[in-house]
Length: 463
Image (cartoon, rainbow, N blue to C red; front, top):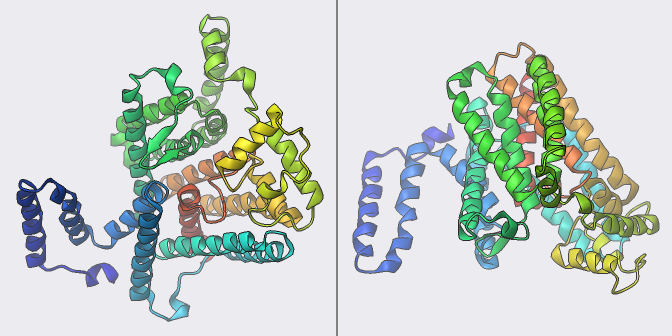
């Protein structure tokens, strides 16, 4: 095994310890040397945890650094991560293709169909270079996902991947806390505040999606007997993360999260399910008749529920109407919007579209399904609808196999199913975090969970 083939020598551990204290000593004389401190620490961690730490480091660095550092450093980081993953994969499997881990046939068919459709749409669009670029990014992304999937051998690796996502949520929490401290916890200021991390800004909808994923996973795991002694800690983390959702005012995440939560409660405790619904109705009524309702209305932007999405959707529908069969090409919807713009230049509607035009390259329609419909035509819409069908089919068969409800695996799969409910309903309002042409920081968390479902499906169902 690979983990047994890595460095075990005790003297090399001692060498890493010596290097650590050497850096500390030298930093007394030169402050800049302190930046070398992580190197011996990383060496110690690699020697201690070996393959697990390497995989953990790859996931965390991809999700926290790839969009938050200088472009040149980002490219170097990505190349290093991909190279390490490729070397580990070749060490584990070599070039014996029959040994390569298989994936569910429905997922394989979906991915190949997506590649083919993206290729055809790119070649027939006015933005061929942009489309082919997006296709290459998507292929590279799935290479990463398969590489990480190939190292899942047991629930130990499954938990490692989940822990890595939880660790990233902690990082985002402390970034958010730091920003709140800077503005003295003034939520009226934070209302229009951008959460900064490194050289980039974290979109609040992205943070909301990330926290919601962790909430659903932890909620499901909390019902497991194996985590009975840790329930108080889990409930505390759930409270903190949900409070963060309220603070950042992630309306779409909160709304869609409720469906995932209700699914888990209905599956595990029907009494708690009905009590939760009753408590929500009662609390909503009490808040509605109280003076706090006006504050809630203002902060949750009830009077501006669309936030300009209706203009973007209307413009996207015009693009779809003119590119119905093969779409505008991957990434092409953005550039087609102004060709048949249904609004007057300089109007509020047009300025809203312009702001979105300048903000990003993908998902101008603010819906995952319209995003694929606009870019890839009818075939894109079919694939966007097929993905949740494939996902829930895999989850159903795995849960059916683990129907005793007592194993740790069962609660992990149940939580991931709840995440799927959240993500695909949220896809009606948001375009990202499902499959956005190789956006690693956006899509990798969900596809790690799909990889886990794929692993359990191949282990229990397809076997």
